Amino acid sequence: AQKVTQAQTEISVVEKEDVTLDCVYETRDTTYYLFWYKQPPSGELVFLIRRNSFDEQNEISGRYSWNFQKSTSSFNFTITASQVVDSAVYFCALSEVVHTSGTYKYIFGTGTRLKVLA
Amino acid sequence: NAGVTQTPKFRVLKTGQSMTLLCAQDMNHEYMYWYRQDPGMGLRLIHYSVGEGTTAKGEVPDGYNVSRLKKQNFLLGLESAAPSQTSVYFCASITADREETQYFGPGTRLLVL
Image (cartoon, each protein chain N blue to C red):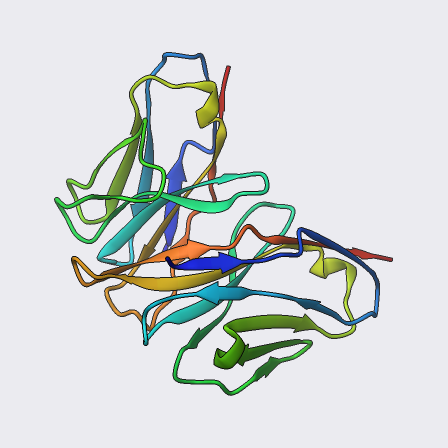
């Protein structure tokens, strides 16, 4: 069954430290999409990145970087030089096909709460 | 564009009461979703719709009903609220293009006493 696992429930780091959030997924689809979302204390869900299964290139956006490895079914997220504003809950998600209808839906991990201490 | 809006933002219900949560999007998206978020559980899909007049069950549909009479609106109903339905509810919409990402509403916080 399709599944997304974020084993780290909560991580605390001191400002300026680097931190990696892990995401492991399971899927039967050969074509799939992976996502990361940020949920700050205000509660809204903020889209960070989308990656399709055919693109294993790592991506960097400012202090954020993502490492996608199909061989280990992982899509990890690293924040370099963390800041207090990075404190949030981060969700990894997988887009799966509903084979009976050809439509798709999303499966979310349970989230990792990141606390960045000043 | 307002994007995805949810009404109400916060509501307190007594056990057994009914209510309807409204999700509206102005992006002409085909697909719409209702999720609930509980501590330590992430977002779990309640129901979804792939077009006007269609609905389908998600992971946790029991106790909820939905309707999509107009493309821009997706309603989530609780016929007889239970304390277990205390949660934060998020609505999302997306085009039929899987390359896109979901757009989320701001959430509705529901407390059932």
